[in-house]
Image 1 (tube, rainbow, N blue to C red):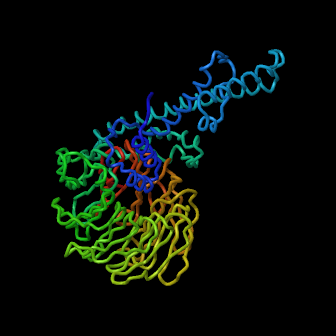
Image 2: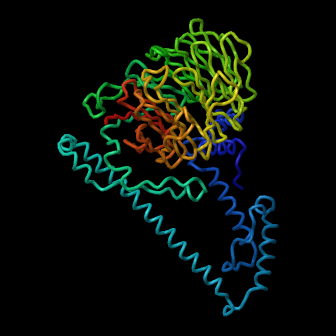
Image 3: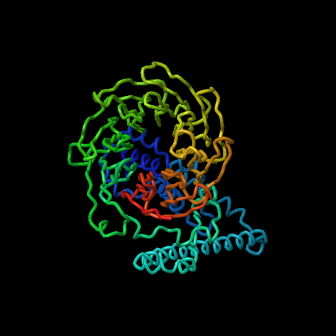
Length: 567
């Protein structure tokens, strides 16, 4: 008889949590279940394996119950068993239930000429619904095929780009791209995405393939990416236990220099020849002058590398995976937050830990510096603490969230702290008061991350309006007026959870990346999509370069892309 081991089942559960967007839960479960020690060939396990396994088991039990006896009237209703029966009863008991129900049905079966009109109407209605379903599926297939053709046309446009620049009106006459409705989202009861008009995303919004550079080399999902703040280096971190530093040539992606292979340095987080799951690179951050890169790993260690890929130091004190890692503005301290419930400030000069903060009662999910000596932490315990180097107690405590606090960010002036949570809300806090300033409640599912615009007091654009952006599992991004605590725009272009958002350096544009495999670039002023790119995997993180003319995105299908942005 085929059986499944506990380690195999644990891996299926781990994959289910990860694929469903429960990233923190997946990491915590994987750590406790020892997923890193599995001998399973992970590349052989298809997406949705746990759900498929359960469905197949239910189908088998029901088939066995219906066919294991001599009585096999398959023209009768096949659904004689309730889900609870399948879980709690063995096949013999299930067969007895089916047999009894069949006998009862046979005794009460009406004559053929006594079938009611209601039954006929029900059957007719079901038939019509099946026809409608088939029609929608065909329409979806046609829509997908049309998008493939549109992409082929876009490639042709790249080859004749100069001719197109001579005639801008020609592009505008192209037929609008068909937006394919996600039927699965409706089926599982999720929020229906906003109906996008045929004119809202046209071909000239789609970034052509000649403006895209695909970086290959990682052998697992790429969780993090970040541009060097002072140059053309791009760092990426992956589940393959490596980080990579890519040297991206200057100029547009379609220039001849980009035809050459990209120079890349591989930062290995393991010593053996095989990848180790416990060494997954979960987060990374460049220091302010771009000379050092810090990486956080699933093994609980932080590592500091030179921009040339040389390992400068390994910081080892955490007892669990590191989820967040940030340099202070001065560059003398590194701050890390871990599943072990603590945050640690590291002294870069000595390579040793300076202070460990043990205030949370559950995993620390995010950390963010306010200035060079004070910072905030958040946790799955619903709490937010503001701490200061040298102080043994929090200098401020913010309580109010009713769910895990996923992310925190200080505004450019360091006076306002934004937070977002599984309780579907984002909140804005100030050190001047204990209670929140604004409670932002427009999202209908968990909010995964938030970002402040690089504007307002303390920024290089002090006269521009300060805006907060929030990204949610409800597939929307929302822009908030910070003074009024009201929504400026609800950006409804994605069909699946949005994991990453990033403002352009000038604050005029916002990039968003989703599990629907799409990256959109929005006009902050108008709340509309100006550029879009469709990849082949879910997007975990997005990052702009310092000049705002390139956007990097890292994907679940092991690749990193660099896209030219021109308006």
